[in-house]
Image (cartoon, rainbow, N blue to C red; front, side, top):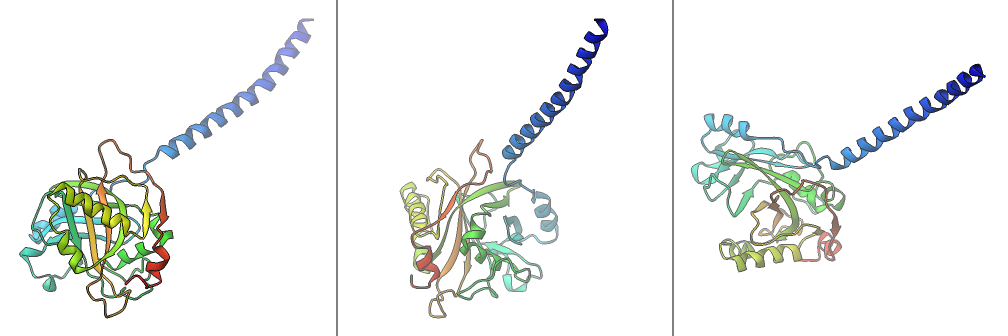
Length: 260
């Protein structure tokens, strides 16, 4: 009888051990999947040291800009301190002379090679803001949603909330957004005219950033048209997760060139 009991216990262990191992594997896979889903979609790659290093040799360098999915990873210069035609490195610039985070920062860059009605996506030969034009395409925009901005010794992260075209008159109209009502009007304006509807809440309390470049998508007669990617600063305790992006009602019309 004792022998039979020992054999019975032995059989039980032979069954239970594989089951236990299987359960451990299943739990491990579940933990991995949950952990993977919680991983931040965009990780800030600090450019503070880059700014400090370049500023030692070039005092006009005041910050840095990095745009997800592109080769835009350039120093920002203060346009008021230098002639941009004489610089020997790739750069983007700001006109206000500020060296600290502003309520709305506007960063401008050249687009010389990617101005056609059918802009190329992430061409490695394109520099400064030429790859910004990749954001006219939905497949690119839905997978690239963050702007990293370094200024005043801090790295800041922005969620893109609009991609749009503007003209010189609009730029002057919304140059001063110190009034909250005017700022709300600006936010509403760019969202209503955006190529895409971003699932991002934006209001007048948010810090904003505008990336601006030129385009000839609508022909040489429309030389005052600017292409813009708009972002708002990620809020306290807000995760840098991927969020929904859909084409707007005007998407096909704008890309068809009939908007202007």
